[in-house]
Amino acid sequence: MSRVMLITGASRGIGAATARLAAHQGYALCLNYYQREDAVKQVLEQVRAAGVSAMTVKADVADESQVLQMFDMIDREFGRLDVLVNNAGMLEQQMRLEQMDAARWTRVLGANVIGSFLCAREAIKRMSTQRGGQGGSIINLSSIAAQLGAPGEYIDYAAAKGAIDSMTVGLAREVAGEGIRVNAVRPGVIHTEIHASGGEPDHIERVKASVPMGRGGQAEEVAEAILWLASERASYTTGALLDVSGGR
Image 1: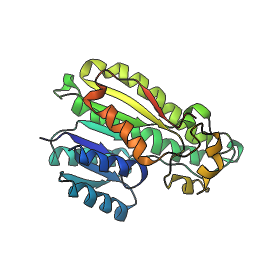
Image 2: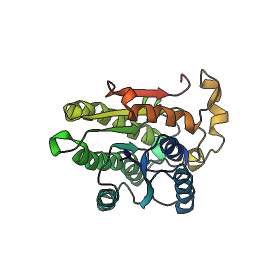
Image 3: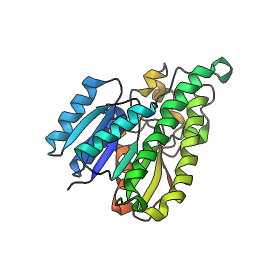
Image 4: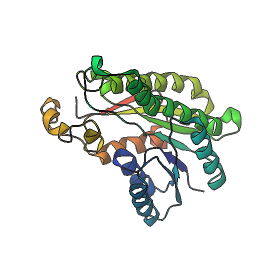
């Protein structure tokens, strides 16, 4: 049977690019989305055209009950899970920290941190060799913002991704003896729709001079890193924070 991969936030950007590449590598796919049903249906058509089994599941990953329902659907449809890509996340309008309210932090941490925790927890229950699983791989989507801090823009988002880095390292060590590898990819400025969510669609044009390679990255370039970490080619890699940031 094909290896099974769950990609959260699979309707656009890095998630969609990862789904397309994974399909060409023969993975069966569960494509999670929350709002963009039309977009995820297009991704579903693309991956099925590659000849793999795939389904979509609508779930807010910050909601524990919805995450549990999603994993129940994976159990029924595929009976196993080999790879989790914790890609779902969000940011809000650019602003300084003293302008932010607590509700914003709750939303950002919920989508980016709580969602990744909940999905990782359920994946481990299915992957761990101590629980009768066959092992697996978890790839968390962090950001180079965790290192740079995103001052004047998204300190809350950067803090959330810093939490992802810490969770990745700790969890990798916690489950290394159970056949599970846990790694994170830290993209830099990537050509996706997320910049419009922050109120600056041309964000990359403004900051690309600060990127040593002089350009923004493509979602497909990040997907290549994710698929490498998911594969047996990375069999001795766990607890790694892999920067895909053009040297930034």
